[in-house]
Image (cartoon, rainbow over all chains, first blue to last red; front, side, top):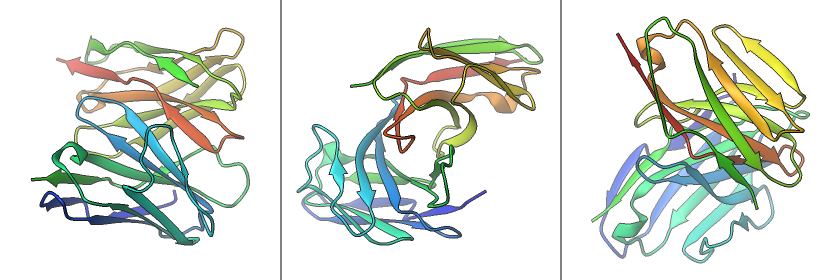
Length: 117
Length: 110
C-alpha cells in the first residue's frame, strides 16, 4: 500500500514556541491531505483539509492562525502549531489520498506526539 | 454535521467472534470505513463499504445498510493481537473527507 511519512514522531517544546510537523506521501501524489488531532482515549478529530496550492479548509472551532497549514507540493503538507500551550499537547496525525481515481482508503502517517511544557 | 455512535468497550475471548456496531447520522454519505488503532500508533485501514451488504477480508468482515444508517465490523477467530481500538468513519464530500466515530476498545482475553 501507499506510504505516508510523518515527522517528527514525537516532540517536546516549551510553552510559547512553535512546532512544525511534516507529512509526506512517499510513493504517490496527494492533492489532498488531512490533519487530525487525537486526545488520549478519544477519537480522531479532523482539524483541517489541506489542498495542494490553495488555502486549507479548517473545521469549525479550529483556529487557523494557530494551526498553520501549508501544502506546497503534491507530496508534502506541513502543520505548524504556533505559540504552543500545554492544552495543545496531543497526538497529531496526517492522512492522504492518492490522486488516482476514487480511492477508498486513506493512508495515515505514524503520528506526532506533541508535549508542550 | 456528522455523528457516529459505537460501543465504548467490548471484551471477548480468544477464538471467539465479535461484532462492533456503528450508527451514523450524516449528509452527503459516500461510504463507511473501519480502522484499527493500537495504543500509541496510527490508524490502519481495515475495510470500506460504499454499497449495502457484506465485505469480507480474511478474518474481518464489514457490513453496511445505508437505509438504516448502520454498519458493523465482524472479527472472527479473535487473537490477542486484535486487542485495539476500532473506529468507524463516514466518508463524505465525494469520499474525500473522513469523520471518525467515537471508537470501540476491544479487549481479547485468554
